[in-house]
Structures are given as structure tokens and as C-alpha cells.
Length: 244
Image 1 (cartoon, helix red, strand yellow):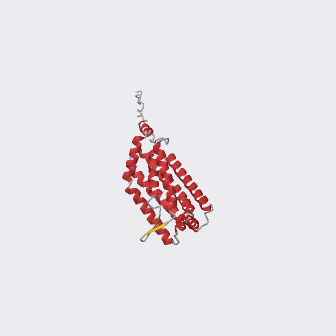
Image 2 (spheres, rainbow, N blue to C red):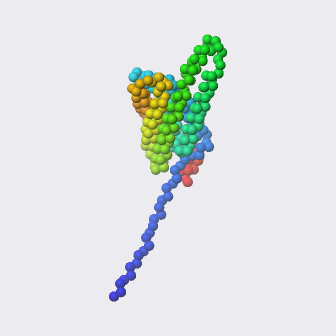
Image 3 (tube, rainbow, N blue to C red):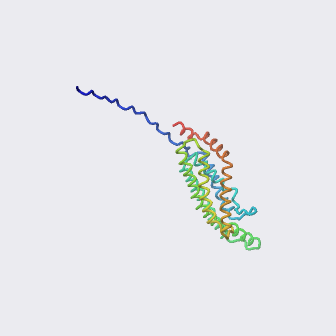
């Protein structure tokens, strides 16, 4: 008896869902320009303020402690809305402006004064106040480039995976990683410029600096998220990217 034929139906393949691209806004908008300008101002003022050592009881910090967390908050907003390339551009532009400010300080100090007692006092004050800023700016460049780039990488990678979900999770994760590296590098390079002379003082400066920055950014996350949501709704290119 001849064996029966075995018929196989062709396998039914289900179409695989193509993941939607991650939504980002174009940088040619007034909102990006405002955020970029704000980051530049914060970084330049932080370079001046951080040259002054500050003590609150046993806690050692610097005169820019209240400013610098804002730079990371702005970095989170830019990374979330405009993407990694736009965030890296903002980092380089802000530090280019900071380097230019240091060069301007050097020229101001080198210019001949009036020669009287008042002029001599002003010259000494400028040299004391602006003279060590170059070291703080160098520390800021090294620390901020390392920390902010890690912050951006984490934000972008997590958004690529979760799209519009998990904003608080990626802000919290990126803040912890970025601020730790930034604070470690910055405090090590800038320590002598603000008068730190011992390992214990450096450890105090580094630990409390990191703790303060992270706590501030965590505390204002609802505000940061609200700003991000507000800008997203008002960026036509972002809304268009969501519907593509």
C-alpha cells in the first residue's frame, strides 16, 4: 500500500512591529537657543564662584554650589527633548564661552592700571578674585565634559529603550552617574584653587558636593519634568516626530 502523502501548509508569519523612532525636536528653535544661553551663563558664573572656598560649619564647598546643579538640569532638558548631539553641542559651546571668559580675565589683569593707591587695590583684588579662575575652569571642563557626557549617554540610551516612558527613571540614573564623575574630577583638580590643602578636606569637599548636587536635582525633578513636558508640547518638530 502506497504511503499517504504528507501535506505541510506554509507557515503563517506575523508581521513584526517596526519600532517607532525616538522623538527629538529640531535645534533651530527659540527654546533650544534659550537653554543654550542659560547653560553658558551658568557655566561661566560657576567658574568665577567656584574659585571661592565656602564653609557651612564642618561642610566645605565653594561659591558656585547653588549654581552648578542648574547646568545638569538644563543638560537633562536638552538631552530629553533635542537628543545627544544637541546636548554635546551645548556642552562644547558653553565651555568655549568659559575659556573665552578666562582669556578675557587674563587680558584685564595684564592691562596697566591707573598707578594710584586705589588702582593698586583694584589690581590686587582682580588678581586675587580672577587669577585662580583658570584652574577652576580647567577643573570644570574636565569634570563637566566627563560627567555631562555620561549623563547624556544614559539619558539617550534609556530613552531609546523606553521612548516616552520612564522619564523620572532616566533623569535619576543619569544624574547619579554624571554627578559622581563630575564631582570627583572637579574637586580633585580645583581643590588647591579654593584653598584645600589636605586629603580630609578634599574628601569632605567631594562627598558633600556630590551629595548636595544629587539631592538638589532629585528634589527638583518634578519641576524639571514639568519644564520638559511644557517645551515638548510647544515644539512643533517634536510633536511631528511623535506622529511619524
